[in-house]
Image 1: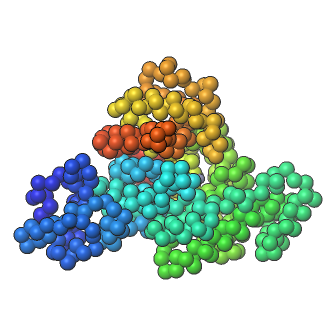
Image 2: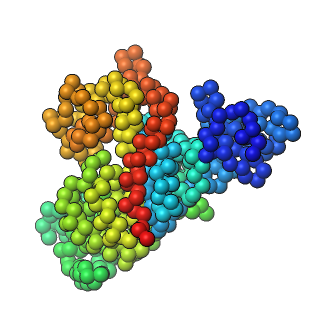
Image 3: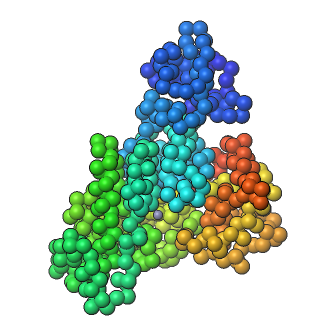
Amino acid sequence: MYLKTTNLTFFPKSLVSSEGVEYGLAQINDKSRLVIAADSNELNVFDGEATEQGDRQLLIAPLSPHNAAALRSQLSFLQPRPLGLQTSAGMGDRLGLATPGHVRAARKAGDKIAPIFAQQSMREMARTFRTPQQVMDDATWGIFQEGWQGVVGADADHLKTTDDIDQCLATGFTFFTIDPGAYVDNRAETASLGELSELAAGLPADLQPRASGLLGKTFNIEGLSLTFDEPLLLKAAVKYGGAVGHVANMYRHLKEAASQRPFELEVSVDETDQPTSHAEHLYIASELKRLGVRWVSLAPRYIGRFEKGVDYIGDTAAFEDDFAGHAAIARTFGPYKLSLHSGSDKFSIYPAAMRQTQGLVHLKTAGTSYLEALRTIAALDPDLFCQIYSFAREHYETDKVSYHVSAELGRAPLPAEVEDLPALLEQFDAREILHVTFGSVLTAKSASGEPVFHDRFMATLQNNPEAYAANLERHFERHLMPFVPSI
Ligand SMILES: [Zn+2]
């Protein structure tokens, strides 16, 4: 390979040749650069500085959005695609630096788990001032750096509006997670039968309970027996009818906008107040099907508590019992995968999730890559870590509002008392406090408008990529291996 003969310092796994063109990612003056060797006309699609090297051209190009798109068009393994029913795992990256570590963990799982490296919700993007394009491109560069050539998906997470869909579709996302949470009517939980009838009457004509065809029907699904009498159907329709209608509208919009481009859909109602019962899950699946929606995974709100960045809180045996019913419904009405949202660190339920779904499962993790960044910083720049922890404590009460967390400031160690910094990341309350304040930390500005933490935070990780990647690899290996089928 010609590139290996140059005196440039390449990320060794990035080197690849395709159709006579060589590509690599090199470190040049502390910056990552795309380097390409080819005939001059092969280089036209990239922006950069070309030099003559004998009978070939050498192009050194910045990691720009244009070059990321050009690279995806030339190296098809970088293009996200639908993953179908394969066991899959999404690893969100709020910093744009985590993909190399994620790739290394995915490698440990062999080809048993289809990974999603580009994954971010609109909420998290807003909190960190990132765009769908940046999320996509950061993942592209990380995949390229590590030379991952297996299949990859890209998850536009928790989309709430058609405008969200349009933005993410334009950027090349292939996995669309539709969140109709705003249309879930929790009044159904406490309403009387009369009130349910009244609320149901307010649903659009095509979502009226009788239109569902479920009234009086009995389902026997793998030992689960469900009869839709009037109260059960009314409650399900009132609670989820509007949500089903919203998903159907989003799906139709996506299908039309995507035209010939392949995509897949996930339906998530995980961020609601009350768990999704089996009857409600069946109602959602039956109604989505009747309305012509096709989806590949669904995230009910399971029993117990799925708090951010900590293990499952609840009775794991009761979880498995309940989850078994959801898995049976997913097999019967799809098959589709059950999706585990807020899936980070739910180590105590992974075996049950794998047992009951037999691999028809999608694990979604988002924020703990940020906690691994903090672990890396605790080792390399303890002073910065301590400042961040103090700041996080001050912002926790405000920042926790849109998350499922139960940490209390009073139970988290005071900054002055902390002796072992990495151990702080294992303390339940401190962990959640650090987890949900990422947006405030990364965007904090001083009185003069300078970033308080951001630049030093990012520089520490960028200057020590191996340290960060090693922490991520170790952390995510623990997440992925329980989903690798044992032979
Ligand atoms: Zn979620």
